[in-house]
Length: 477
Image (cartoon, rainbow, N blue to C red):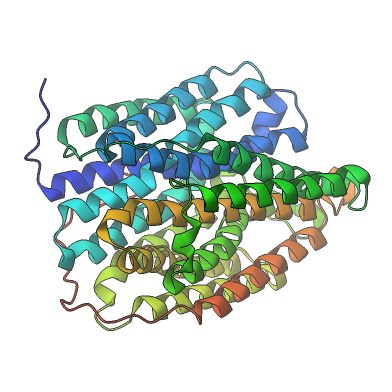
């Protein structure tokens, strides 16, 4: 059955959006139901947290690895491999008999992280230059929204069915998307040779594991214990070895030489910092509102109720991300980056100091969503516009990878802070959430300061025009 190589950019975009949304959903779909999974699989809170952390870790390593594979075998084939990994991981998770198998399944799902950079690269291949910014903006909005829509959908799915359906449903959807992608995504040429730096991949995984373990376990191990300090030291050694390996490699997984470009290293540092803030909010705001009201600070919300409180964030994120591209006519990408980081800082501060009202939490989430939408789109556009067309996939993959690393670090740190403040009945004390959101506000504030260093760049010779793209609802895709 031959491919339909003449598929229009509109059709190609729709398939890419569906693929990106499917993977984005997996980022947060399990977050609100970790307590349910912990109870059903008879495991501990610390262990079940690795259902989330293992996914982030795998995605951090898989993004540059699969990006290099895309250079060798082509973007279209790599997209199919990534989608296949997501579907296989979902199947394993749905039938997992214990938490160990579930964590392994989440690692397999993390291999699908290549969907993001590969999709951005394909967009640049099929759209004329004047429309790339708008198309990337809308796709970034779908990704950002999908990351949070999982939180909204998790409650009804678990309430009506079972937590395993959080994986059965995406497995079916991703399988269908894979078949359609195979039929319509234009064939892209392979890079024509080269090799994969497996040593760098192992070292990258090594320093991330050595860093995340003490960050997540430091409160229980003791921050000054030999195990904690030894893990940090090992992470430093692995990180140094990884840097040397990448700099000496003719074909690095993450081209650190590209980081010499001011627009690249500054934007990626913003991605690292705001990735931590974004996922910290995604992961722990739903848990905060589910804390029993008897504690004096929680709302006692159900999983569904927590998702509804996150809905304003999802809506504003989708809207602001969608208009980000056309908005560059009047507000440049750097200005959008600053606005997004500023709104993120104010929102995290509000969550830390004023989370005693459902209305306030919903309003704060809406403001945070505006910042996220602007940040996602502007970061990608700044990166894409700063590198040659041939390096689009590598550069956008690096940005995705660094943001994911930030998310994994932020999640580990916030988890350690929250669980390190024990309250009545084994529940976290309010001070744990307050300190955690203050840390996230600090990360957002640092992102704002770094964004000031991002070069403004020259205005494009042709002003990006709005693209006649399909109306995409994150829930529909």
